[in-house]
Amino acid sequence: MDSRPILWLPSEIWFEFLDRRLGILAETQANLYRLRPSNYGVLSGLLAYLMQSVMFTPPLVNTFVRESLAALQYRRLCDSFGMFFLHTLDLERNPCLEDILQADSADPGIKRILGELKAPGARFVRPARVAGDEAGDIYPIGRNPTWAEIKRSLEGNPFDIVSQWEFPMNLQSYSDAPNSSIEGKACKIFIRFCRALWVSIHPGWLALGEVPEPATIEEALECWSLHSVVKHTMNIEFRPCNSGRFKGVSGARTASFGERWKIYFVDEGVVLPTRFQAFGEETGYIHLYRQTVRPLNTDDTRELNRCLEELLSNCQCLPDSDLARARNAAIWKVDKGKMIILVNADHLRIEGVGTQTRGEGRVRRAPRAPAAHRAPKDVQVQMLIQEGYNAEDSERAVRMKAKGVLAREKHKVREEGKRKAARRSKKAKNYRNPPKRQQNKARNESDEGDEEDEAEGDEEEEEREDDEVEEEPEEDEEEEDEIEEEPEEEEEREEDEGGEGEAEEEDAGREGW
Image (cartoon, rainbow, N blue to C red; front, side, top):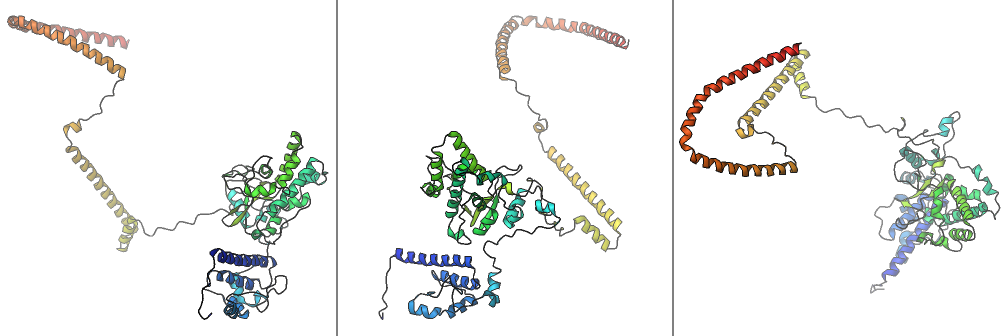
């Protein structure tokens, strides 16, 4: 040992050893949570320190933890063995561990650090009924609360909105049904289904360290009541089942409690996901369901499924299970560190879902803060008042000044527009929108007609040029004749205009009659 040798260990052995230490400490803490001894805070602080010491030395240690370590001779044991052990810890004794503080109330610092500790299963309390408040007892958050109000109520205290569990009277026939009947077979399958689902949950989510073990149909339905779920589980989040039971609810639809028989009771031949494979073994409820359905005819199978659907539809709570492989099929769904539990919409103490928040629970917007500065006109008025002018004259002066400024701005804009117009070219001033184009057919016809006219015009021009060459000597004579004929044409034009005037007068007289 004087040479200070180094012992090399495979990483698998070392990390497996650390994992076992952490696992045992976590399991001990879970048992302490269930037992809740009088020094639960002292023991929790001690175990938390030991968990941190597995990987590193805790930088901050509370006073009551330091005193507990000193009483247990932590330093001496570590120097002797290189590790700390709790040899005298026994959870079945009272006290569990000697030589430390036996009550949290003896040290005020423990309560200040850990706060008030609630008993397991007592996170929610059903409110006491107020005498004479029948409407408030039936609809504690209103007849038609919004979907958001229902969610907030389930998060705060689900006992406010979920009705108290009572065995339904319409299921009395299942209690008295013989084992050989379809209802009796459905009860047997349903009881095993309840026991299997509760067994599949990890112990870390159990508040009491034990799960319900129903033996009758009444106990099987009661184990899914709100009171039973709150009692046996921890770190849970209740959500309303959006199955379309109420109108006006937005968001993705989920299967109702009755329709979930297709998720839990799978037909033979369907490949089960990993989480459901154990239920298909000989002791599983899916194996019992398939074995029961195999000899039945179609009508009896349909009746058995109807009975299972009716039993599920009367449950108050169920886990948010999903059988689809693409969505990572699971029985107990966890979201953001919380176990998701669905609440049956039929057991909510409401008439419907509204769209308007109640006046008491309406989230009101905070009042808008006033502006930090006055308006510029108000500042000018106040400055004139400070100079000795009265308020009316000051306001009139500021108003007239504002009109003058506005008139100058308008004049400036008009002058700028005139200058821009003067700088424009004549082409830009005379610019107009081009005519609309004709249709292709009309344009093609006009093009063909233009080509024919151009051809005819060319022929006429050639003939005219030939005639002009031949008739050049006679041009002078024709010009003299045209000069002589001009006066005659003017006389004829005057006569025509006079005739038109007389005709117009006759028409006007005729219209008058």
